[in-house]
Length: 178
Image (cartoon, rainbow, N blue to C red):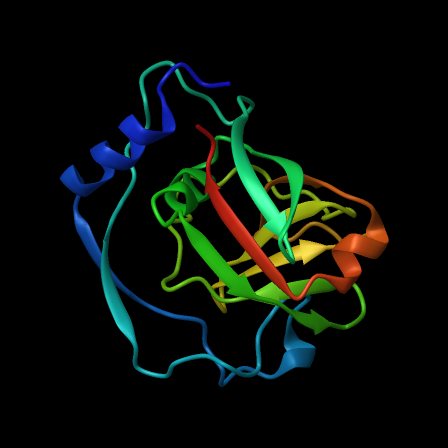
């Protein structure tokens, strides 16, 4: 657990510089990425968002507990303390419909792209990882091992559920832990 409560982090984010970022892109070919979205994006949709600030004394190896439900069933989950994971926290409460991508992951689009500055070293995604594919702006929930490490795919945390539950998930809800 980090020493700064998630609510304090969410309140601190609006003080940072605002960025206008687009939602998931639907113009990219699926074969070009290990994690992408080819439909249900809103072209031209933009939302102003605040860049997150780094809490004093935090590092990427510290985890943040969040509450996650897959199709209405609660599962244990943690986020790492990377800039993109902290930015995801500013979007909570977040519910996304999930679609299959290549039989390896379930993907969905948050309402805007996440801040990826200062991203940690890339790691290959594994079953249970919640990741963010930066070029297309989608979240990916891996139910099988993913592609080799790529700077474009940022692992945000881990969802502790069985591969069958992860593979069949049609909707995910993420919220701040109390």
